[in-house]
Length: 322
Image (cartoon, rainbow, N blue to C red; front, side, top):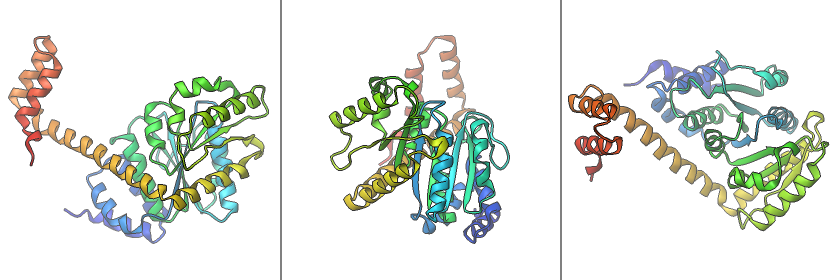
């Protein structure tokens, strides 16, 4: 059934209504039943925006880099949408937390839209929620979308992997480059940034990381750069922006951009399918007498959960589709 309120909001959002955009984002965050209709309505308007994921350990200066990169993009005439993933409860209209208070200047800029997304309280999967918000910002007409995460946990890495370009920010205190590989960050980085490069150890970390990137290249078609910034005074920000744009151009020239977006849609489809099928299955079976009996047996230790789940799947017959 068509949700006329959602349809009206989509129409107003596509016409440039920022309040309607904020309301639609809230519906995506709440995993509203209207989300499929919203996504169907905005699909023809998608494909213009370029998405950059920014991640790194706490204290690396991600918010400062995001702030300065946004300002530089605005100087180049680009409009920007920012999705800031916060570790706290969401506030109406988006929270301004801690370090992000410095981005306050952008709230007065009609060319910038900032939304905080809580890691707790999101009703859908976080990567899917971030993708949904990113699509809304794309449909709204933003040229550049920046997704900034609070850390480098698996959830954050899953989120930034939905981006076209992933920037990993480190600081000299992050430790040696071997630890970077152990943390799995090498697997996702399109660009490395050593921020706070005026501190002791920055040159050494940059040299080590550059050597490791050269020895273990992620791609044959892209040499992952290791840049140095002092974001607090704009040092290296222009070079970072240029590197992002160079990566964007390389993705276009090699056809890897289309390949990457196809992979993103593949992951999104199966993640949504898993999420929705599981939710619907549990909803239908949670009051089923046989399921309640299995649950009681698992709780009492009379049945292991793996066997119980196999019995549920067999009873649900979901694996017998043709």
